[in-house]
Amino acid sequence: MPAYGSFLCPSRGCVCSTFVFTVLVLTTVLGGGGTFGVVLESTILASPQVTLQAVVVSFSPNATLTERLWTILVDNGIQWANDGWGGLANSETAIYITPTLSKDNAATSMAPLIQFGEELVDAQVIGAHVAVTTFPSYGTFFDFLASSEVAVGPLHQIAMRQDELITFPRL
Image (tube, rainbow, N blue to C red; front, side):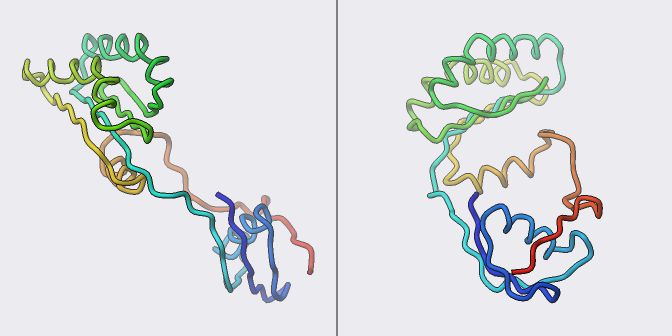
Protein backbone atom coordinates (compact mmCIF):
# COMPACT_ATOMS: atom_id res chain seq x y z
CA MET A 1 0.00 0.00 0.00
CA PRO A 2 1.72 3.20 -1.09
CA ALA A 3 2.24 5.63 1.77
CA TYR A 4 4.03 8.94 1.96
CA GLY A 5 4.47 11.38 4.81
CA SER A 6 6.38 13.93 6.84
CA PHE A 7 7.92 13.11 10.18
CA LEU A 8 9.59 15.11 12.91
CA CYS A 9 12.50 13.23 14.42
CA PRO A 10 14.58 14.94 17.14
CA SER A 11 17.88 13.76 15.66
CA ARG A 12 17.00 14.48 12.03
CA GLY A 13 14.53 17.39 11.97
CA CYS A 14 11.61 17.30 9.54
CA VAL A 15 11.79 14.42 7.09
CA CYS A 16 9.64 14.07 3.95
CA SER A 17 9.68 10.60 2.57
CA THR A 18 9.05 8.23 -0.28
CA PHE A 19 7.19 4.93 0.12
CA VAL A 20 10.09 2.72 1.23
CA PHE A 21 11.53 5.42 3.42
CA THR A 22 8.08 5.95 5.00
CA VAL A 23 7.76 2.29 5.94
CA LEU A 24 11.17 2.35 7.60
CA VAL A 25 10.59 5.68 9.33
CA LEU A 26 7.18 4.59 10.61
CA THR A 27 8.74 1.46 12.06
CA THR A 28 11.28 3.64 13.84
CA VAL A 29 8.68 6.21 14.96
CA LEU A 30 6.52 3.43 16.37
CA GLY A 31 9.31 2.30 18.67
CA GLY A 32 11.63 0.08 16.66
CA GLY A 33 15.27 0.79 17.39
CA GLY A 34 14.66 2.72 20.60
CA THR A 35 14.02 6.13 19.07
CA PHE A 36 11.03 8.45 19.01
CA GLY A 37 9.40 10.72 16.45
CA VAL A 38 6.17 12.53 15.66
CA VAL A 39 4.12 11.92 12.53
CA LEU A 40 3.25 15.36 11.10
CA GLU A 41 1.26 14.15 8.10
CA SER A 42 0.64 10.94 6.25
CA THR A 43 -0.98 10.06 2.93
CA ILE A 44 -2.07 6.49 2.24
CA LEU A 45 -3.61 5.23 -0.98
CA ALA A 46 -6.77 3.32 -0.11
CA SER A 47 -8.50 0.91 -2.43
CA PRO A 48 -12.19 1.41 -3.10
CA GLN A 49 -14.59 -0.66 -1.02
CA VAL A 50 -15.74 -3.84 -2.75
CA THR A 51 -18.45 -6.35 -1.89
CA LEU A 52 -17.29 -9.91 -1.35
CA GLN A 53 -19.24 -13.11 -1.87
CA ALA A 54 -18.14 -15.84 0.53
CA VAL A 55 -18.64 -19.55 1.03
CA VAL A 56 -17.68 -21.19 4.32
CA VAL A 57 -17.88 -24.92 4.99
CA SER A 58 -16.65 -26.42 8.24
CA PHE A 59 -16.99 -29.58 10.30
CA SER A 60 -15.34 -31.32 13.25
CA PRO A 61 -12.15 -33.25 12.48
CA ASN A 62 -12.86 -36.38 10.45
CA ALA A 63 -10.35 -38.01 8.08
CA THR A 64 -13.00 -39.27 5.65
CA LEU A 65 -14.68 -35.87 5.37
CA THR A 66 -11.31 -34.14 5.01
CA GLU A 67 -10.52 -36.41 2.06
CA ARG A 68 -13.88 -35.57 0.45
CA LEU A 69 -13.33 -31.84 1.05
CA TRP A 70 -9.87 -31.88 -0.51
CA THR A 71 -11.10 -33.91 -3.48
CA ILE A 72 -13.69 -31.21 -4.16
CA LEU A 73 -11.07 -28.48 -3.76
CA VAL A 74 -8.63 -30.18 -6.14
CA ASP A 75 -11.27 -31.06 -8.72
CA ASN A 76 -12.59 -27.47 -8.84
CA GLY A 77 -9.58 -25.34 -7.87
CA ILE A 78 -8.55 -24.20 -11.35
CA GLN A 79 -12.09 -23.23 -12.33
CA TRP A 80 -12.61 -21.39 -9.05
CA ALA A 81 -9.35 -19.49 -9.51
CA ASN A 82 -10.44 -18.53 -13.04
CA ASP A 83 -13.78 -17.37 -11.58
CA GLY A 84 -11.91 -15.06 -9.18
CA TRP A 85 -12.11 -17.11 -5.96
CA GLY A 86 -9.39 -17.15 -3.32
CA GLY A 87 -9.28 -18.28 0.25
CA LEU A 88 -7.92 -20.81 2.65
CA ALA A 89 -8.60 -24.37 3.63
CA ASN A 90 -7.43 -26.78 6.26
CA SER A 91 -8.49 -30.29 7.31
CA GLU A 92 -11.91 -29.16 8.54
CA THR A 93 -12.64 -25.76 7.00
CA ALA A 94 -12.81 -24.11 3.59
CA ILE A 95 -13.32 -20.35 3.32
CA TYR A 96 -13.46 -18.83 -0.15
CA ILE A 97 -14.19 -15.24 -1.21
CA THR A 98 -14.52 -13.38 -4.48
CA PRO A 99 -14.95 -9.70 -5.28
CA THR A 100 -15.81 -10.39 -8.93
CA LEU A 101 -19.04 -12.41 -8.94
CA SER A 102 -22.66 -11.57 -8.11
CA LYS A 103 -24.37 -13.54 -5.36
CA ASP A 104 -26.16 -15.82 -7.86
CA ASN A 105 -23.06 -16.41 -9.99
CA ALA A 106 -21.01 -17.09 -6.85
CA ALA A 107 -23.48 -19.75 -5.69
CA THR A 108 -23.43 -21.37 -9.13
CA SER A 109 -19.63 -21.34 -9.29
CA MET A 110 -19.22 -22.86 -5.81
CA ALA A 111 -22.10 -25.36 -6.12
CA PRO A 112 -19.92 -28.45 -5.45
CA LEU A 113 -18.59 -27.03 -2.16
CA ILE A 114 -21.98 -25.69 -1.09
CA GLN A 115 -23.62 -29.05 -1.87
CA PHE A 116 -20.96 -30.85 0.19
CA GLY A 117 -21.59 -28.54 3.14
CA GLU A 118 -25.36 -28.96 2.87
CA GLU A 119 -24.95 -32.76 2.81
CA LEU A 120 -22.96 -32.55 6.05
CA VAL A 121 -25.59 -30.37 7.71
CA ASP A 122 -28.43 -32.63 6.50
CA ALA A 123 -26.58 -35.70 7.83
CA GLN A 124 -26.16 -33.87 11.15
CA VAL A 125 -22.39 -34.27 11.09
CA ILE A 126 -20.88 -32.93 14.30
CA GLY A 127 -19.78 -29.32 13.86
CA ALA A 128 -21.11 -29.13 10.30
CA HIS A 129 -21.76 -25.62 9.06
CA VAL A 130 -22.24 -24.12 5.62
CA ALA A 131 -22.68 -20.42 4.92
CA VAL A 132 -23.11 -18.59 1.65
CA THR A 133 -22.89 -14.93 2.56
CA THR A 134 -21.96 -11.45 1.44
CA PHE A 135 -19.49 -9.16 3.16
CA PRO A 136 -19.78 -5.45 2.34
CA SER A 137 -15.99 -4.98 2.52
CA TYR A 138 -12.66 -6.66 3.14
CA GLY A 139 -12.76 -5.12 6.63
CA THR A 140 -15.93 -6.98 7.60
CA PHE A 141 -14.51 -10.19 6.12
CA PHE A 142 -11.31 -9.69 8.10
CA ASP A 143 -13.33 -9.15 11.30
CA PHE A 144 -15.14 -12.44 10.61
CA LEU A 145 -11.89 -14.26 9.89
CA ALA A 146 -10.12 -12.83 12.94
CA SER A 147 -12.99 -13.89 15.21
CA SER A 148 -13.12 -17.44 13.80
CA GLU A 149 -11.04 -20.34 15.01
CA VAL A 150 -9.32 -20.78 11.66
CA ALA A 151 -5.54 -20.73 11.91
CA VAL A 152 -4.14 -18.61 9.10
CA GLY A 153 -0.48 -18.71 10.09
CA PRO A 154 1.92 -18.39 12.99
CA LEU A 155 1.52 -15.41 15.25
CA HIS A 156 4.32 -12.89 14.97
CA GLN A 157 5.00 -9.96 17.21
CA ILE A 158 5.33 -6.85 15.10
CA ALA A 159 8.63 -5.32 16.10
CA MET A 160 11.97 -4.30 14.69
CA ARG A 161 15.13 -5.85 16.10
CA GLN A 162 17.99 -3.54 17.02
CA ASP A 163 20.29 -5.21 14.47
CA GLU A 164 17.79 -4.40 11.69
CA LEU A 165 17.91 -0.66 12.41
CA ILE A 166 18.69 1.37 9.33
CA THR A 167 20.48 4.69 9.59
CA PHE A 168 18.60 7.37 7.69
CA PRO A 169 20.50 10.18 5.95
CA ARG A 170 20.16 13.66 7.44
CA LEU A 171 18.04 15.79 5.07
